[in-house]
Length: 188
Image (cartoon, rainbow, N blue to C red; front, side):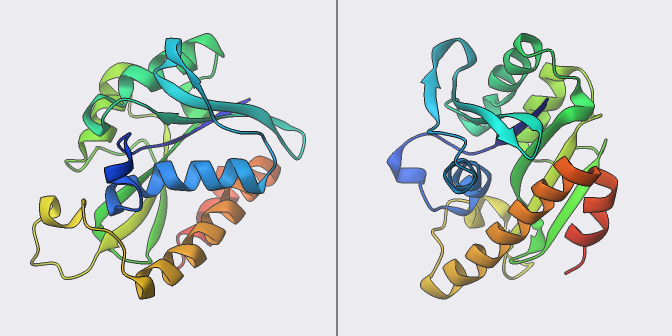
C-alpha cells in the first residue's frame, strides 16, 4: 500500500494557486483513476480516497490543515494504514524549480518548504518521496509573493501537461518502482 498526499491549503480562496498544486493534483488523480471521491475524514484531518492502481492499493489524501500543519494529517494516515515513510509520496509546489519543471526525490531536506518541514517533523524522518512541481517564474521574486498567485490561462495549459506527467510517474511508481519513475520524471 502507498500513500499519496497532495499538499495545499483548504478553502476556495486557495484553489488554483501555485501553493495548492499538490492538493489540486491529488483531487484530479482520484477522479482520473476512478479511485473515488475524496471525502472528509476528521480523524485524519484530510479528504481521503482509497482504491487501487494496477494491483497496488493506494490511499490518496488532501490535508484539510493549512500547509504548515500538513504533518498533522500525514502522520495519522501513515500510522492507521501502517504505511512506512518510504511508501509515502508527497506532491507539492517548489519555488526553486521554474514553472513546468518536476523532480522526484527521496530523503531530502525541506529547502524551507513549510509543508514538507511539518511532514518531516511529524514522521520523524526525511525518508519519504517528494514529487516537486516547479511554480516559479523569475528567480528574483520572493517565494511568498509567488505561491498564492493564481495561474494564468497560458500557465494552466502547462500545468495540465505537468499533471499528466505526474500521473504517469505515479503509474510507473506503482508498476515498476520509484527509482524507475525518477529517471523519467526528472527529465525536463
